[in-house]
Amino acid sequence: MFKSLLLLLLVVAVVSFVGCMEKNTEDPIRTYTYWAGQSPTKDVQPIHGKYWESAHWSKEYIMYMEVKASPLWMSEFIKQNNLIKPKTPEDIPSDAPSWFKPDKNSVIYTRRYGEGSLYYVNTKTQKVFIYEIQL
Image (spheres, rainbow, N blue to C red):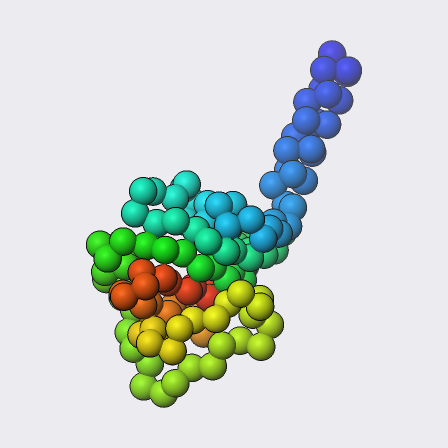
């Protein structure tokens, strides 16, 4: 009985600590999956990614991603996230990876309320550069 209880407590402790591990990847598919909560669909192809998530239960994260996306995916993404064009130009964060270089013809979007997330959408090249921060 004592051994069973001890084993149960050990299993609960291990499961609890595993859920509290930091996530850190530069794999584009994993970045997309951590960010979206699902694998990429046929409408979006991750090209580059960088994702960090704290071990904290509140899902604090910083994410950079470059994807090639269908026009439908881009328009739905903008609509579903209520993205708006900022009133003043936004600078790319200084800690951005070297590959995070949106085209000058990209349209810049941001969230109405938030901590500075940026979205660069180029409908001609079908490239979307995403910088999201939630701290």
